[in-house]
Image 1 (cartoon, rainbow, N blue to C red):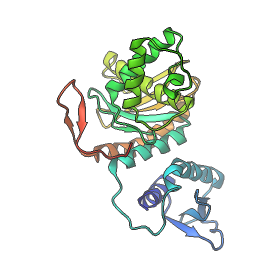
Image 2 (cartoon, rainbow, N blue to C red; image 1 turned 90 degrees about the vertical axis):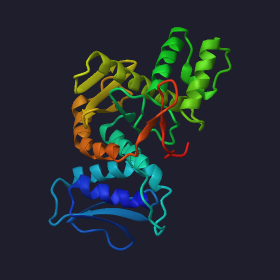
Image 3 (cartoon, one colour; image 1 turned 135 degrees about the vertical axis):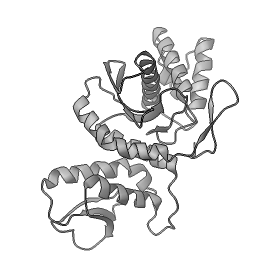
Image 4 (spheres, rainbow, N blue to C red; image 1 turned 120 degrees about the vertical axis):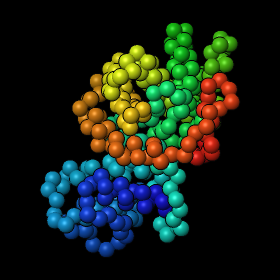
Length: 287
């Protein structure tokens, strides 16, 4: 139920509407409204304006993208269930998922300038991975590519070719860090691309600590990242190196204040006992 409340809040805010509500049955809304069907096929999300809005086609497309970003959670939402407080980590991860859809990206993440904390990720049911895990995975991916090994296929269990010991240990570490849920080859390629982008973002920050924006258009790495809230960075990972910076950055600029508020609302993190890692005070998402 909290997913529905969150969606209504975001719809009104992002659409610049005067009201937002859910409806079931009855006549379709009038000219002063823009609406979109929800994944359950029974309800519709309606945003209402004081006067009939212009450019209705663009507004309908924007609302559909917003609903699509919540599709995974809305498909399990139960209308009429007792509302509860929305998990702040889940709220941030869902906001990044919405940004991913709006920007036409593969994934999105939030890191800061120096700590190993992965503050947020659009990855559904992600594990306990952090920035250090991403750096290790990026190095392992480079080693696998140099050795002619398809690392994503190995992680998915689609090949049975024996691996060198270093690669075998690395594959086990990635599986542990990224959670134990089943992924196909394409799913692991997306995870590896996100890990590589996180590691690249941190390397670029070390080289240019005063930068406020970075863009990479390499065949093996398509990344756009922007600074928000002083120390935090929001990154978008793309499948195509020819992605449109203009379109993606417009989505990022629009979402940045919202994401910054969600990041600062997260509970505090305490330093871990060893290796420079950071341990969460409490586990906020199931893996």
